[in-house]
Image (tube, rainbow, N blue to C red; front, top):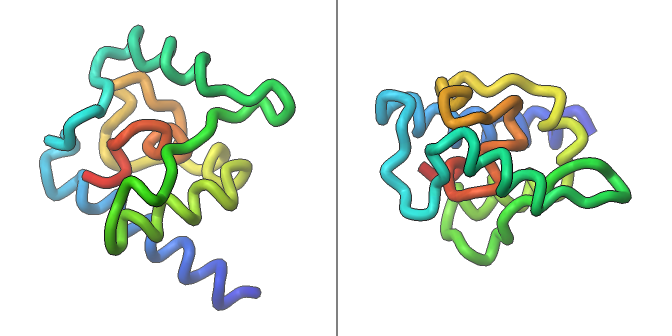
Length: 107
């Protein structure tokens, strides 16, 4: 269990570090950069049963991004409690889960 958790953290850290390498701003199409528009997107994707937004499907991606989105889909409650370090709060993101409800986590 601990090994799997460490692997999950490593993949998510890798995905976050990709965005840091791009100066905190992703060039990936479909990323919402307007905080008000992102908030509206997040609200539209929030599942009333869990009060958490749904992530994009892993099948939209390849490689490590696909793995990261699969993990995000499996443990949204964990990611919702984790900060993101790619300076995406400027886009309206509040936690690491927010990076995976649009294409931001892939960039």
